[in-house]
Structure formats: C-alpha cells, structure tokens
Length: 84
Image (cartoon, rainbow, N blue to C red; front, side, top):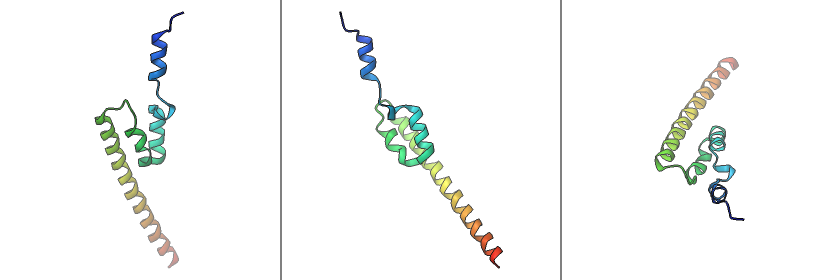
C-alpha cells in the first residue's frame, strides 16, 4: 500500500488549464496583448520565450492597428467621395 511517487509528482506538476499552451495561443489570437500576463506568469516558460512572444505580439498589434487605421481612412475617403 505504498504511494505511487510518479502519479503524485505528475499531479503536482500538472498546470492549471489557463497555462496550457493551446489556451494561451487562443487567447493571444483572440485578445492580443491582453493575454500577455498569461505568458509572463507561466511557470515553465523561459525568459527568452516570454520576450519573443511579447515582441511578436507587440509587432502584430502595431501592424493590425496601422491596417485598421488605413482601412478607416480609405473608408472615410470613399464615403466623402460618394456623398459629393
């Protein structure tokens, strides 16, 4: 009736659902930089991983803002051209 050390270690080393990589990727794709705390608080990610993911997220967010801004300006120009 001994305690199985391997199952005990696997249960204690198991991360909560919000630290699963798939959940973090979905969160980053859904809410962008708002999901970065999930990356930074992840206990198993190395510092390099956290910095790279943060950098990629910032760059993608910047280009998304630029694209949306350009689309909005074009839409407003077309609207003014239609209005006369």
